[in-house]
Amino acid sequence: MPSPLALAVFTKNRVNPAYDAARMAADRVAAEAGARTVHYVPETPDDMAQQKKLVAEALASKPQAVLFNPTDDVAMQEDVAKFAAAGVPVAVFINRMPGKVLTFVGSDDVTVGYIIARALIQGLGGRGKIVALDGTPGARTARDRTDGLRRALAENPGVELLGSRVGYLQQAPACAAMAELLAAHSQIDGVWTANDVMAFGALEALRAAGRTARVVGINGLPAAIEHIERGAMLASADFSAFNIAATAARAALRHLAGLPVPSEIMVPAELIDRSNCRRWKVPFAERAIPAWDDFVR
Image 1 (cartoon, rainbow, N blue to C red):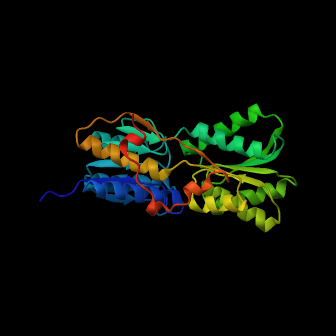
Image 2 (cartoon, helix red, strand yellow):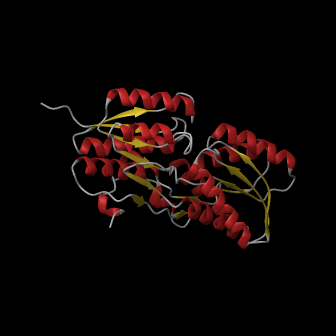
Image 3 (tube, rainbow, N blue to C red):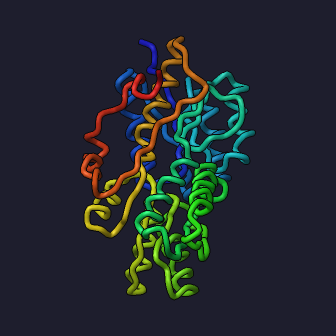
């Protein structure tokens, strides 16, 4: 009996629940097709050198296809090229990167950063002082989301960006970065963050300082939904690593079955606030896996 198809799945860390959801989605899609997944995750979160070593491990195991979320969209190009040279199709997901790949699956991160910034600005009535917690500079998603923030600020001169810090898309670094911003600015009305995990870090720092501010994030994580319901967070955006990874896995399996796959698949992201947040309360383990034609027309 032939061995099941193997998908090598690369994610950046085990500290962000969004990547837990992505791995779960890839597992479920593979199992549905009688395939298996092998996960490659750096022990140190977002560590590029470790991800490079994991690429070598995966190449040695000869998977039939790869789902790849790069720690750095520039530095990892040469490593992804090794899969192409070996004839292994690669579906890049979440973080776009150039190179010879089967497809990219993700969302429009500039728009995501923009809509969540607009939600913050509207929550402040179009006036106030805000700070930003940016993501890892090596992550294309983070850079694009910050571009979206800049676009929203350019349209709303009544809101001043006091300063920004890199929170590395993780809670502890974001908490430390927010503490620095709080120490530097006596008035902060709002906090824009490039993902929910950093929003949690900002909330932690605000509590420790005995201060309040409107906080927004991105990912629509279950904990963020709870914060939105309680009023601790103003909004998030449904940049769904779960849906994106599931679709990337479907793309790889379709290609292996000889079926067509578009070079780019965009998964829409929706604003989440108190008016609609109940729709996102379902745990990832209980969510339906998106069908191929949900996002591919």
